[in-house]
Length: 163
Image (tube, rainbow, N blue to C red; front, side):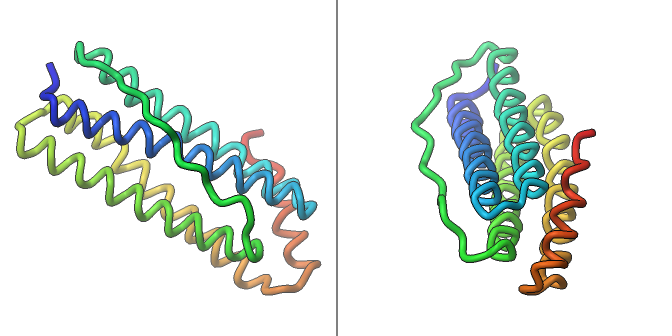
């Protein structure tokens, strides 16, 4: 069984994962509004991934015979200064998520909660990939600058995600 403090911390992480999903869905809407359907599709796929992450925590809490307590999800930003600003936000956000996962892992270590450590190991590895992808996308968009042709070429590349 999970300790009360670990249960509360994992429930908080569910909220953070759903916030991440909302943030990516908002970014998808932004990209749709500026006619960048490839980037919108990429963000929509991220939305699905973040919901899956939330459910992974949800199921784990239930598997440990603990109680899930869902909280209100904060409203994400709806407007961004530019496509580059979106990718800067993505990278910054993924770094925050990484920090949150690391804190959970430290908590599990202090409690000698080996099962939670095992779960969190998956998330730690996942965050390495998330930060790598965000950095790569940000660098690509920065290299495109404000040149519409290059940005459209990059956007077209993203239409293949998930196929």
